[in-house]
Amino acid sequence: MSIKKTLVIAITLLSIHSVFAQDEDHSFYAGIGLGAGIPLGPFNSRTLDPSGGGSAKLGFDGNVVAGYQVPGKAYGGVLTIGYNLNKFDINGLAAAYPDDNITAGTSGSYSILTVMLGPSIGDKNDKLSYNLGLQLGYVSVSYPALTYSTTAQGSGKTTSYAIGAVSSGSLGFQVCTSFRYSITDNLCALFMANAFYGKPTGTYTETTLTTGSQAVTGPVTFSRYVVMLNFNIGVAYAL
Image (tube, rainbow, N blue to C red):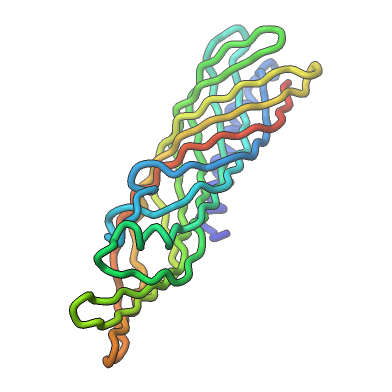
């Protein structure tokens, strides 16, 4: 993890701790959940345009959540740290561009880290609690390396492409909700759902090799919409 990412997480944790430490009567909960990460909109669409879709597949998601609700009130705050791992759907490129005669090559996976903090509202009874939060924060995306080839229909000339892995980050926002069902006085079953958005920009290195010519390497600027919907189940501890 880079120094920048570490500082973002550390500052966020220290900030939320300093707010909570002002009153010993605060109502806390913390939990962890694992589940599915569903790419939405442009991030799911299959395209070769650097400013377009991400061709991301259904993947894995995990979240750590820590929240606070003012005793006797419906409002509080919530911190969420999330991680997504989604495979790049290289086979989907061939279906999206049938006229290019794409030959699928190799690809890796998107790796996404989010750190989100914001206000929440909620309610609870003896067994069931829920919270709804609107959060702002940081979205860091590691883009996978990718190779593929195309064949021109008229000339039969083959062009191969290799795109290097790259990481980039941006500000983002998230809507999150959680439901907690009390198993004991403190231990709870946890269900979480969140949807986040970010638009990292950056530059990757693309190498192009056409039949009978030398390879050409150059930078390509991208601006990628990253939109995810996550569902998690797990456990929480309430104080």
